[in-house]
Image (cartoon, rainbow, N blue to C red; front, side, top):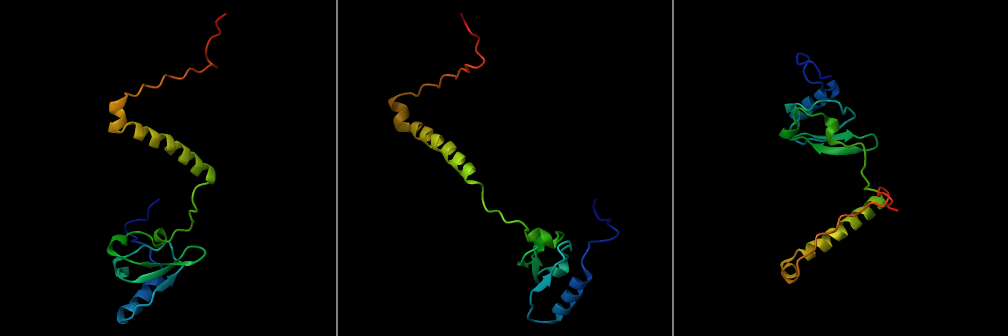
Length: 131
C-alpha cells in the first residue's frame, strides 16, 4: 500500500539534519546511513551517501533522476555470481548448432546446393503397432 499523499515522502529526520549541516560547508563529506527506506528528495541532489546494504556501505551520488526513489534501490543487497555451470554448458551447446546453420545460410553455400528441409521426427512411443 502506498503512503498517503497528505503525509508526504518519508525521510529519516537524522538525514535532514545532516543535509542542513552540509549546506553551509564547501567540502561535502559523504553521509553514512542505514535508512534504506528514506525517499530521495530534491535537497539531496548533489550530495553523496554511503548506503548500508546489510554487509558494507555502497557509495552513491544523488542526481536529479533519482528524486522520488528510495535510497535502498541504489544499494543492492544480493550479489549475482552467475549461472550454474550446467546452465552455461547447455547455453554453449544450444548456440553451437545455430552458428553452424548460420554458416550454411551464407551466400556461397546457398548457391552451391540448396539445403533440404529437415524431416519431421516421429515419436516411436506414440505410434500404433502394426501387425
